[in-house]
Length: 210
Image 1 (cartoon, rainbow, N blue to C red):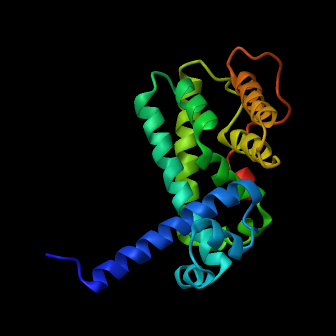
Image 2 (spheres, one colour; image 1 turned 30 degrees about the vertical axis):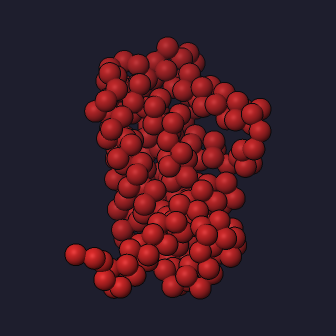
């Protein structure tokens, strides 16, 4: 049976929404959530009117991108736990390879615009907490297997990730190398073989939300 006009309209609407979210996610990751809505529409290949029909304001677009991004990182974390031979390998994979993880921390903790919106949205908060719980599971497993130093908490990892995502847009190979080096240095400092005590106490999620 041929698709009717209503079916085609629904498919077009879904495709437009997906294109907008892809463009917004990429642009938020580079420029932050303050990027002009008109620019997002242009990159998505849709009209500004179409964008506003799907997302009536910037807040609704930020929430949609954040929720989708958190969900993807949670899936990435569970996949890393299931597929990697050690918890340390899972942590390294998640931090080094997940662009969604970088964006999620930019939105949740590093972006002023998003930080003012996300705490008031129950679904976004639930997903953020699920993300942190998955990360905490990997951290605790790495500590139990003896590959990660025990005097750090999941909150410490979150702070390090926030610092890493506060970087200029990556455009050149030296900038990419610099980010990869920063990740490698961070991971090396988290190894159980790292020497020297850390100041203060391990941070957890409640410290970040205080």
